[in-house]
Image (cartoon, rainbow, N blue to C red):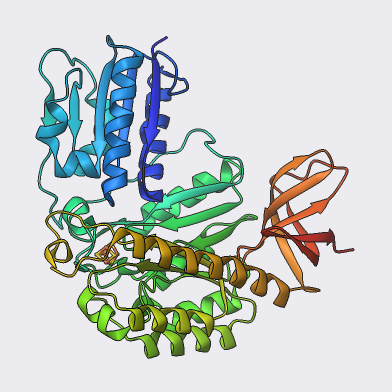
Length: 430
Ligand code: SF4
């Protein structure tokens, strides 16, 4: 039996796509082994969102080439999309596959000898998103369904529109079929994900994100819940909020990128909202959906970010009821407008600002959990060991509680009692 080893860098969508290739190769008779072992085939799904991801992607390719010089090495993902020639020139790489054809890797593996081949076609808005087939569990309780790909927003710092192409969406019937399969396989939480999830259906007037959610909930029976991956502020419809409020199979969890609390910086980033609009909408949603867990992405050190700009970000974040704050340091990506802005920020300043926000992130996380004490939550249990069960609530609080039973994969009602480190401690609600 041939062996295959995978390494995936970057975002959730990459993880989902690797999962699909893995599933197909298992069906084709491959055995999956750890990346550190000597495999017959290595598949590396790269990322290029920062210069660090670039470096890591290259290092992983070199690791595979070293682990078994006789192996077939396939490189795909965003770095393969952006720099196929450079990757193909790495001695020992057999195949470089762009993002458009990634889902076909299991069908194009053989024969691969001699000089590296490159399969990289331009991505067109007409390229349909292939439906996925699921045969086996990759994780215990949570599965991801890719409903959308591509982005046309061209924020000035972001390389993604150049690597993922224009917006495409998966047909609602295909999404429903995938959710159905996953629920039948035993998954209890389905995360709908994409590169720019809120743009679902952008080029197909009948397909909308809220409409898709309604259809899934109406058509897929069973005990499960649905979580949405990150969504831009302007793409949260009132209908979506109503659904989250009224339907307990939809998680009260919204990950809404902010990036900066300074209007000047937001404008230079080509983001499509102001700081006031962001603040107003978050507070409005918090009032409408009690207990909703918000996550936000924030970038520090965007070119020209002044002390005052950063202070505006800090001030805005302080005013928001956030559960999670993801802090990123700006990394210039060649080919994006911001990379050529003259007022780049010193790495030391980026580090200092990042430190400030990371400390605030911990404080906000605790504050949010504290505000939820005494309330009842349904936890989807992901892990039970030595009498301790761990899982997440629908609003994404990490919860631990005691139980002599193995409750993995079950929904359990608990009451929050306290906080320990970065998680909430609870007891089973009797
Ligand atoms: S919305 Fe902006 S940050 Fe998000 S993927 Fe598109 S260009 Fe990048």
